[in-house]
Length: 295
Image (cartoon, rainbow, N blue to C red; front, side, top):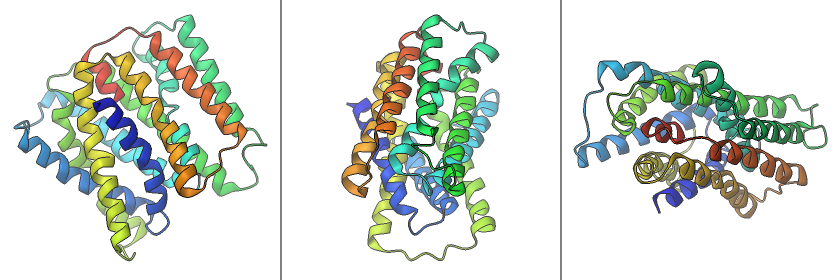
């Protein structure tokens, strides 16, 4: 149930963020979501008596998760989402595991098995399908830039995962979450002010409700739920379960935003998620670090 909660929470987040971006600049959208998530995670940590000072040995991974994932990934993926349909954005973002596989071989010495290699090739083929001229109008520079931004975001998330896997943990990944989110907020709020100026968008009840979802059920809740699910489920089960997230995003975007995924997107989804699934099922369990990497 925790894993299902994460899938639907994150699956709904992409279409909801797409609607937020109709009236809010991307940096302010990211910064305000982070601020709400920070409040929720500190409250949750206090309620569960798990608010502890991060050990000095875990500061490097705390910084990399914050800067690469919570700042870099969220900023670039949100900027791309402003230009790219929500369903396509979610699929591009979930190419992250494809980049982890060769990265783990290069930097962590993990073996690139035949199964993993086939998975990477299948996923890259899916990307070729997504970026072929029939599926993407290469004359629209802003749209191309949006797609590239989300792919770069996926690479940053992959770099964060590699550090998580290779880091010798002293505390648990969940115990670092409130501090990571706080640091991300302290970076994003002034950045949004400098780049986008003061927030001048109108706060309506609808926009408030969307932000409440994006910051709480869309961010704080799934972070907690995936950490708890990782204690009870294997890394492979968790990884495969999360593959349903972009599918949920596509369906919700169809029903709510009237997006119509073409044949190219559906073929790409099958190839990319199928490739990720091949890589995940060919990977031995690595214990707590793998659960953190899924997060």
